[in-house]
Image 1 (tube, rainbow, N blue to C red):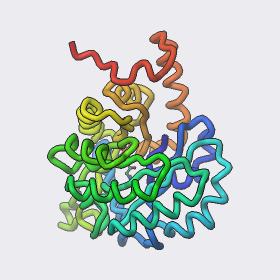
Image 2: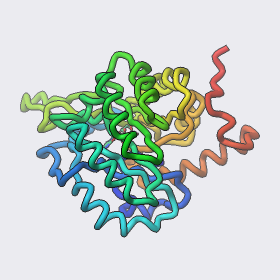
Image 3: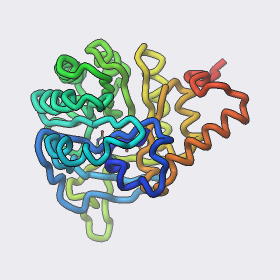
Image 4: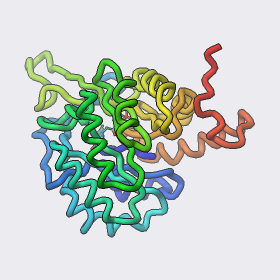
Length: 287
Ligand SMILES: Cc1cc2nc3c(=O)[nH]c(=O)nc-3n(C[C@H](O)[C@H](O)[C@H](O)COP(=O)(O)O)c2cc1C
């Protein structure tokens, strides 16, 4: 799948990728109403990665359903909506509106965005609030509920188990790591918000470690992401226990990377005589 906020609504990438080869597209974080996002500058490059503070810029759930969805609904892949909010009520409002659009197979509940002042990551960094928002959304959303976890916590396993108990069908991890960058000449931060979310290859070892820990502790499927840029990276996450993976920042470096990764996975399977890709899920050998 492609990760929320890094692949637009799929339309922007259709010239570069055969969308039907992808497992799914997770669209940009969608909130109860239109959001402008944070002031510029809100992107900064770092060694082996980037910082962003976009801040959930989107047109709101009603515009998504009436304007965007009719344009993308014919894509031959699964489109999941990344549901974001500042209050439990807002998450519930967005999720119930998406529940009304029958051919959307699931949502990804974003309780881990570090770039918004209220809500966002606050829900994903406290176990009781992660449970409360998952439970409330579960009540109104009958189809697949994936909950996206924040790495900015001491014990991600505790939160994963909490949302599993609250009714999540799967968990995805990780969202961005909280970071910052400074211009030494001007003595100013590089982002208007001072801090932002770090993504890209630099976060891969952290993501891999967390996927391995969570996959060893929960029964529901784990979707791995964080710095995945090649088919080999994807295989590493599957070996660590991920049942599926998402590609994020790598789409900015090479817009065709997700399609090429599908081919790369097939080549890996041939090379290792693997019949089904699911055979390598959790097959890490630590003996
Ligand atoms: C510019 C940008 C915008 C993002 N927007 C969202 C978002 O709206 N919702 C969300 O859950 N994650 C969002 N993310 C986080 C990514 O989906 C992903 O979790 C993170 O970047 C780590 O994966 P990566 O290293 O492969 O990019 C965004 C990331 C970037 C770089």
